[in-house]
Length: 352
Image (cartoon, rainbow, N blue to C red; front, side, top):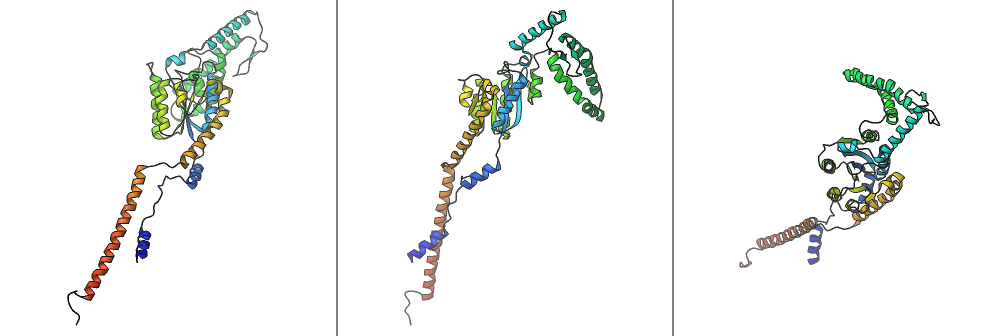
């Protein structure tokens, strides 16, 4: 009888089920198959880390190639104030002085170029760089101004047709003007970054304006869960709290800067210098870094973590199930005894 009671109670007890987020080998394989590549966002603090020693377009392209090793580069954003765009590095100034001096010597006939100068718009050759510049300004620059005026005055479908008609000529002029004409302000930093695919924004000339705008943009992307990896180009320690917040939200963080012992590189998951980016060393090391991240994620999923709320809920469910089964058994036993008493009659009455 006792064995029968034990079997009946144990069969009616609820089974202890694992939580839904419990990691099993099946869950590991399914999650890895669902998403193989993470979205990456590049945030560039131009006020703190402009590409002084390298051409802007080459630096932006190398940075994008290195970040692509961490996943799909979805966003490329750069913030700076007016001073960063108007600043000219000393190397660019020295190069302009040398070009101006050589142009004067060529005009006087003191020196002759080894090869003729070629206009990249029409292909015409010149044996003096000064003549090529004058030719470009008198003909091609005027043509570009006329095209822009026509597009500006047009409306509706006519404007769209004109943009499509002149797009190739306008792009050709921009690429040629970059090497021939000297920008009036700065050295073309914004245009070169835009050509590389960056979204460049100028902030007001206020203290920490670019840092505040960059932090707000990073937090907004973390709130919307649009990226899984953040690449920050800066040496400013004010971004330490943002990186810590990103790591708490299980995002990977990468810092690009020249300060080897800075707080940013100590906080981030990976760090590279500009020299490593330009030499292609960061592009190779990123593969091993991503491999270590994947191994760490697998180990974290295999670890057993104690969750008080989940354990309490499961324990309470078991206790409630045991109580309900015991009460059911007691009610059945008492009911059978009452039925026997009713059938046998009152105990003090004698059988006739």
